[in-house]
Length: 170
Image (cartoon, rainbow, N blue to C red; front, side, top):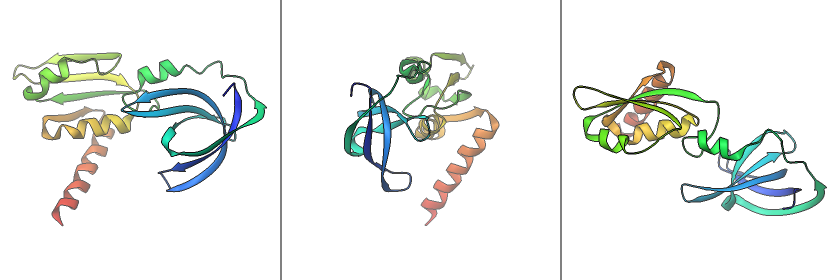
């Protein structure tokens, strides 16, 4: 967009409304089959991620902006576990022997360490970003994965499982 501030209409799933606001478009990227856009919301000055398919209208204004000097989209994407990026977290996750080979074959985070256990299971320690995506990933393994640390995030997963059980008890 030639570093022009834009006005767009965007449908936000969080509150299920279409909002109109000004952005500085910074960088397109693809993740998990979707096209996304890093933007700086001019009203707040913070950087956010927008899903391109939820943009209703976009119009470039005459106002231009300077690209943020501290903004490194590649670094943000490298440190995030999935779509979400936020403050870095360190997690330790136990995986069953059945899943160990699958976990071992990939690099899940730039900083990670795998510890083998005598029973064939493993413990994956990693420093990453995007707690929401990490949580979804752990839960996707069912009983073949268990968050060991940090304990306060383990409580979040426990609460999620309890809510899931309530849904199946109906």
